[in-house]
Picture 1 (tube, rainbow, N blue to C red):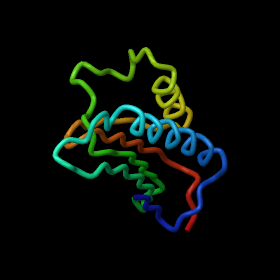
Picture 2 (picture 1 turned 90 degrees about the horizontal axis):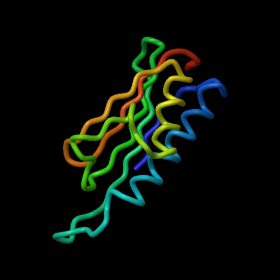
Picture 3 (picture 1 turned 90 degrees about the vertical axis):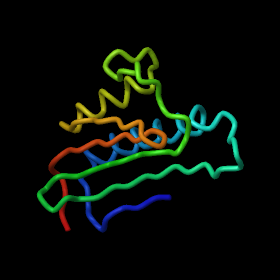
Picture 4 (picture 1 turned 180 degrees about the vertical axis):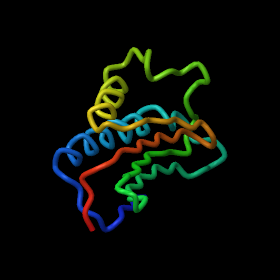
Length: 115
């Protein structure tokens, strides 16, 4: 499921966001759903919204097996998640990860939004 507010984002912000979404959705497809048990439905969600204060919130989440508690994106050995971390910093944003009911990456950053 994809939800995007009716906002315009500068190209300097769009490209890193697109690369982040591509990496996180690819990771969900590869790793989050190794074998769906109990006939559950696999779901990946992408949400992009403005909070009205010139802040932008990008979330990519899934209802898969989740990341291990020991996971730390700052010390991640994989190139893809290192890229997500670097692109978040390029946006001047902050990244948080939730492990409740799967995995949810939330990136908040400011600027470049016009309605």
